[in-house]
Length: 165
Image (spheres, rainbow, N blue to C red):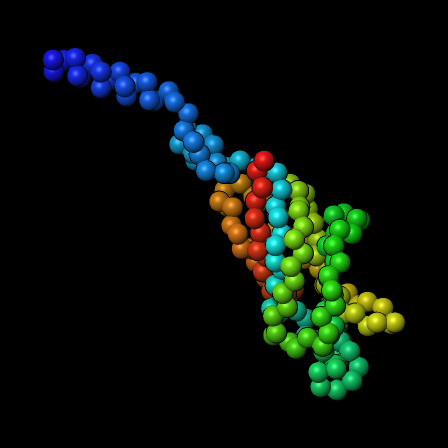
């Protein structure tokens, strides 16, 4: 009887080893340790917490005094030469103030996108404050939901989700 139980146990274990494991979204493999390239990255929130305080040459972004000399932040997202998103205009933004925009756009995971940031001067046009590349998926990063760009006087936080199907 003991031998019969042992044979049944070994047979059960052998049969279980061949079964496919159900992995969480974004992972595959026998141990669910291989990342799957997402089909899309869903860009939910962009937050600016720092940007160039002055123009090249040291002058303020807008003419005027006090808050009216602060930039009127506006940004666009590009896929190559194609503009895919226009933000609203954030008027007279104080340096260090966090600007939060919710674009809810879908980005291809293997495509490079650019974020261009402007000071909107109304009838006088837009002044480019700078640009940064949006995050793309990198194998081995374990699908972070928050990503940061820090450089060129910009601090930009992106909140993203990943779509696999």
